[in-house]
Amino acid sequence: MKELKDKKILITGANGGIGKAVVQKLADAGAGLLLHYFDKANEAEELQNSIVKAGGNAFILQADLSKQEEATALGQQAWELLNGIDVLINNAGVSYKKHFLDTSAADIDYFFDINFKGTLWLTKTITAKMIEENVPGSIYTITSINGIQPGAGFSLYGASKGALETLMKGIAVEVAPYNITVNTIAPGGIQTDLNTAAWQDEQKLKTINESIPMGRLGQPEEIASILCSLIASNTYMTGVTITIDGGWLLKHGYEKARKKTKE
Image (cartoon, rainbow, N blue to C red):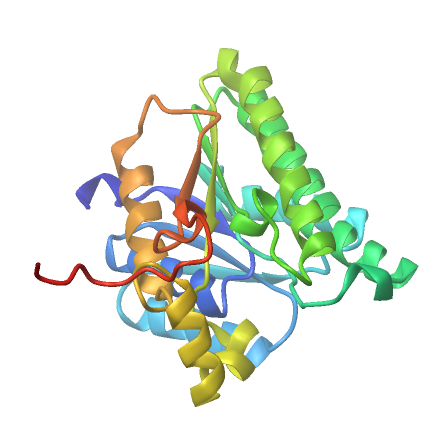
């Protein structure tokens, strides 16, 4: 992916799960990186050090994206450190399962302040700078298939991601005249630290795998490969959602997906 060499890229939630897989692939391709993290500073520093030791270019910045002033400051500081940004990857987010009838005001604020508002303010900051500096940039936002078709226990989480889906499509229309593309990636079940309790439990994992047509959870590296390929392609595509879910959204009826038997 020589097209990624020297690209200036800001990625949020860079030190875990999908974020870390994306960072490693971008670093291998020679991109200049600004790695955002919220907590686990040691992990962020280790990731940065590994990139620098390998001859790469990476900075780290801490920010609480639930706070507007910190989300905005992150964008401004990242722009200055990298001397501009070509690509913003909105990856940071929070998720947990909770029945709608048990939802509290605190749950609503938590999901929407981080997943929706924080992403909105950071994206606004970066796109404004791209327009001001005449940078033909790209914005990629990691959402979720729950933002398209929420499962049981994910109504509120899905709503926050669904709001992001609508927001990014609207932004795509409004910034297209400035040669900025905006797209989303909606993963299905991906094996990360966020769902450790599920995939480390043999029975739970069996149940999950049986509900996915591909028969398994996806890996963070699979999301990273597609995302990095899109960035490298400098594609004409904008306002599009790419689902990476092992066929989850294709399911119909009650029958489980099975291999075809010989007749």
